Length: 294
Image (cartoon, rainbow, N blue to C red; front, top):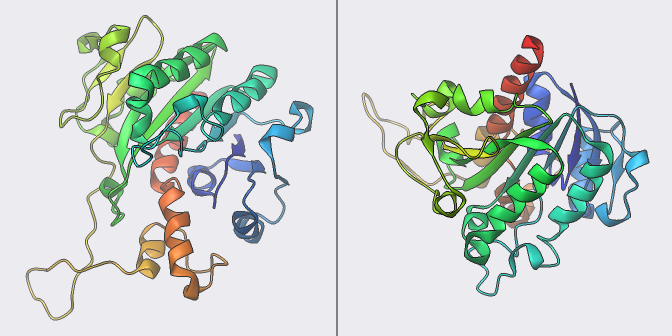
């Protein structure tokens, strides 16, 4: 499968999808520093700088489009967040304009959990309504990077949808690898639009289908959590702070990322913004599995 990546950052989605067996054929990223990293790791993949000037016909054919669109106007850290009406987070609509012109078979989107509460919950509704209006069915899940073994407490929301098809539902109704013993669709609870807005974080994995359209699942873990250990202990361990270089190793981004070790603050920011590759890899494998069954 071929992947077109938007708001690429340093390529967390891209790396994970490649490890699942997909091929990245296009990237769109405006940050010059991120572009340097992308060119180092994907030297043959074309990069377009500004999504607002992107012409659909110039995007290489791809089965899947992924996008971790800007979160600043949705983040809980922003006391004056404007939601999807904001200049940066509102780029979601520009991305969907492109989607409406091309209609790739699959969409995988990512943003911060603040999306669930922004604009009194209507931002989430707006995302779902826009996806459905363009013919996409699927669901969303909330997931923490800690559960992949990354020493970083980072919740993110992922949307997975397929065009004019219910194929994406299979990811949410058969997500045992991701979320433990998720109930089947038959035992799923039904959510109305108003109660869907309240579905954020909980301890029990849950799959919910809405109106034959979008649903959500609350994920628990892909693999056991890794912890750094101090030396000299036998039969036990004690936790210690994780250094920034170790974050790169555990995040499977690799040391040769083109970022100087003297730039740890920027390194940390880039990693904090990036999609955890292990999550993208799991999603990619599920999509490939579904494609192979059709």
